Image (cartoon, rainbow, N blue to C red; front, top):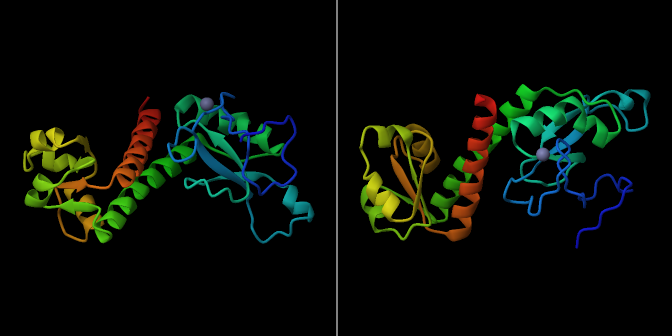
Length: 218
Ligand SMILES: [Zn+2]
């Protein structure tokens, strides 16, 4: 059950109960997993400084905590341009009650990189646990929860995109080389995710990377 109190929690390392965006102030219903909100830990810029020294009162910096493991003191933000900009300008500092050194561009770079890496890591884990299949025959026969089609494979019509779409939700993502790397092959044009919860996790990671790309492009 979520409890909201006006004060900061007494234990700074505990999971935050109030998961409101520090950019717009709106509270998200289901921040965990879905990346409706993303978490940044607000950490001292130098890690060697003892907690109670003078230097520990120096500026903090936001460090992306995509898995929401809640290390350090943290703040939740919508992965949109407006909220990331507001968080960077004053939201983080307001949440931490301390100076926070933050740049919008760095937040976006960190988010994009982490979201894409997570998607590829999940595919790689799925290949090892046989929850992801690749290759034309295997994908064609799979009961897929989500099919990923490499952007360059789709452009060159190397894979049967129509069949991918018909077999379930298909998303264009990555390149033959990057999907291949995740599968331990040189080039892979299409993968099918045959596990429901893994498909949801991959879809969430890709949705975040698309949201961040949109925030960057505007
Ligand atoms: Zn927001």
